[in-house]
Length: 304
Image 1: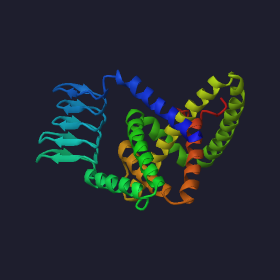
Image 2 (image 1 turned 90 degrees about the vertical axis):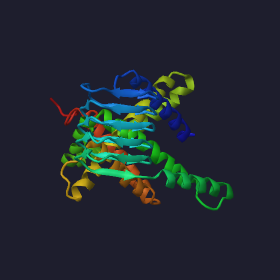
Image 3 (image 1 turned 180 degrees about the vertical axis):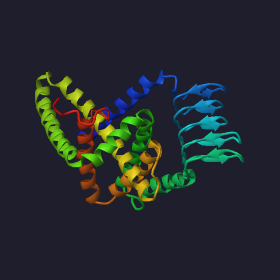
């Protein structure tokens, strides 16, 4: 029951977030975006739309579904999930190019100064779904929990890309604080989670007489927001650490988040160890969000 309530409120929060952002000039749902020649935009984020970049984008282009066509300049990264990406011969991408589950077409002459990450997984994923669901009905191929984990990982992927694209500076700043103040962040997270659980229990008890229902709903929403932001910070932390381990000193927030998500996703699939790992991540995530006030302060709790 608890998981169902969490899922319902999480979906409501996600929908509300998309709805509130849809009116932004750089964010659309199922609409086409054109950055014309001599036009400059900060970020371009689209879900299901076709994006054409002929001018300049100061930071990132992120599209889920739809298409991306670049003949102009993107000063950071281009990320497509299930997207057909085409770089014209005049295209300039100064960051990374990430294509997952889509199609990538690079014409001769285009320039990508960062890394190119390309997983042509559409056919593999489709085959997995066909075989996986066939296995469910035959009760012999794939455990249901594995499919649930994969769906959860995909949802986290979408959320992580969105949060990293909208709050790259806050994510990067908060991640740096984990290295600088790990144990204070850990104990802050443990204390915060303990207080939060206590408040949830008290609000649930008061909900019997209706008074606690608004507080309970508010706490659940707050908990979801903190969990999401904290987890994305940790994705970035692990992704950047992995990138540094391979000798790369600078990684774009989007690529770092993708790498971290893959690493965390692999560990989470390990029985028991994955559960303990996720629990520790929750503590650290809460701690870094509370201590840095969502990546805006080095130590929000410090006495002035």
